[in-house]
Image 1: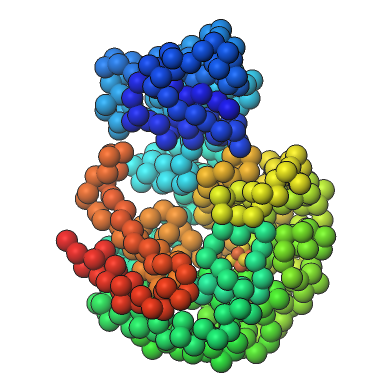
Image 2: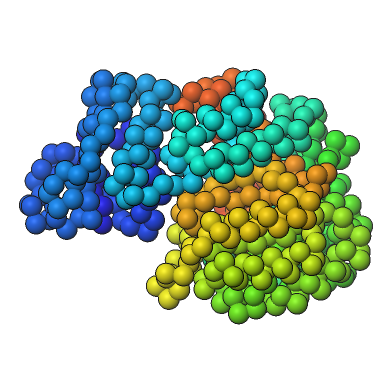
Amino acid sequence: MILLVQNAEEYNNDLRAMIMAFFSGEKISGMSPEQAGELSPKMHREFTFVLTALYDEKEVRLQIEEKGSVLYTAYASGNYRDKKKFRNRLKLAIYRLLSEYTGKTLPWGCLTGVRPAKIAMAKLNAGKTFNETVKDYQEKYDVSSEKAILATKVAVRERALTEGIDFENSYCLYVGIPFCPSRCLYCSFTSYPISSYKGMVEAYLDALRKELQYIGYTNRERKLVSIYVGGGTPTSLEPEELNLLLTDIRSNFDLSYLREFTVEAGRPDSINAAKLKVLKENEVTRISINPQTMNDKTLKTIGRAHTANDVREAFRLAEGIGFRSVNMDIIAGLPGEDAESMRLTLKEIRRLHPNNLTVHSLAIKRAAELKQQMVTYGSRIHQDMEEMLKQVSETAEELGMKPYYMYRQKNIGGNLENVGYAVPGRECLYNILIMEELTDIISAGAGASSKRVIRNAPDEGGENIRIERCENVKEVVQYIERIDEMIERKQDLFLGV
Ligand code: SF4
């Protein structure tokens, strides 16, 4: 256990995130200097180390203490109440202090946020060159040159791909189908086994239709640029149900500004020719077929009821039916996998030759059963993560793809990132718009979250936009019974002042 002692709470989350980046999985106990002063020397010695942050109007004094001896001290100068100027100064000081203490550097330096490319986007928009932007990442945040170049490349693609979009008057529609063939061990999404919910699908689609009608009607004057049907696994539905859902979507929205229509086919065990034909007939332009790994043993471990061969067959089927944009998701850091396992997965991916490839660094979220399984698979999780991501980047390049969106998550393996690669012209606009928070995302379905982008409204970090959200309930029965309330939540978010 690590003890964090502070005389002010303003940066509590920042400090904790930085400590977690170095000491993933360790517990942190927080106290005031007065409370810490009451601990006996024996209790003090039980902590792995004590990190103290003492704030006054001119500077913050940081120190690391181990077994009663102060080992390292650092200062961040400035008035801590001026959050806009001070936050990064403090994060950099704490990063350098922990780096000195552990003898380690982190690829993303002191950046702990989920959208590392956003910084590059702002700098490029302000007229900085590619090289100046890379240098800023390195000097202001201690980001490695490799990651600084990656984030800047992503921002360059994002700018090119979103050029000409009227962000203020455009929006994206997200539709959540919370059913899957079985539950993956690492899942923390809203997902229920379809076999137990068969009898509820009709009522679910009825409720969803009501929500879609509301969204379509209230946004009839705006431009719908992207539709993303996710979940869950939408193709867990039967072909007729899928057709009903897509017909509901198409009949309730003006599609004349639509640039793309994505449906996550996700699990190969949910796909067949009849379902793919329904998607094609309903003008879906992009699908995902997600292997996660091409190693059958790992697939079994993580609770996916399909084999690598099912992935190959589903992919060939989709190609035969005429899908031109197919994404494949893979995960680095799955239980028991190392750089060699990734090499084998990528060999198979190269044979299939998709035009979108997304790599996720495994994130152990609170809800995931995998967290409990850490003890079983423990030390091998996250091994070789950086090497795995490097291999993916090389494979993507070999397949003619470029990185075009990225994000990080809390508790992400190796403190790394998730990156989407695509052959130019095959990118998913939705992924950029949601990650960079450029347009409203209006969502329907159980567990779906809507985001409103409010411009010219500085947040406390000094950005000129503020994001407000509303969530739908996650539980299917609750969603069906409380559909009017879900609609009212959206009404409050988007039509409220
Ligand atoms: S396919 Fe995705 S949503 Fe479904 S259980 Fe697996 S991780 Fe969760």
